[in-house]
Length: 189
Image (cartoon, rainbow, N blue to C red):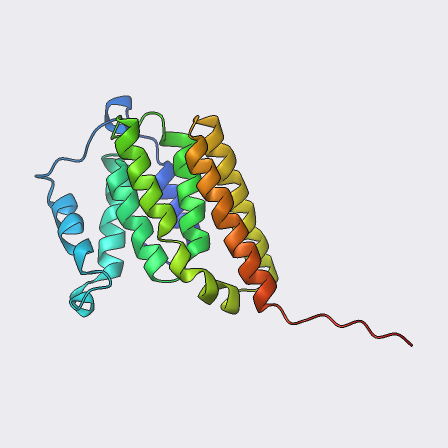
């Protein structure tokens, strides 16, 4: 599995599951989930060097494709992408998740799901300047497009607070892109 290929992420996310698996919580006894949930705490900590992020991602994508669309799993996978400085893929995955699974996937409790989503959105903020400095114009446009689609998905799910938070993130990225672009000077003949 090529975890560097965005299509692999989206294919695994969008893999069809039976209705009961779509809405199910990952079992705490599932060894893959146990591994992922236990290892993710190392991300960004002093134990980060001991974390095998590609293996965590592979196992997480396998679970998404075969067992559950549990939002906790998606949150952990997004965290690995955000930490690695790949906000564009993280936003693509999040947007597709919200469009396809928000209403049916675990947790069904809207307040819990919103809390996870708030955390995910906040985790985009620390990487804004780095992405702005390193990205090409087409990557910037794609990222802003994903943010706009995500805000629309939140509105369709009647999550106006999350749509507003996404719009705020859009504005922060826009500002960073403007500030990191070379100044355009006009010269008169």
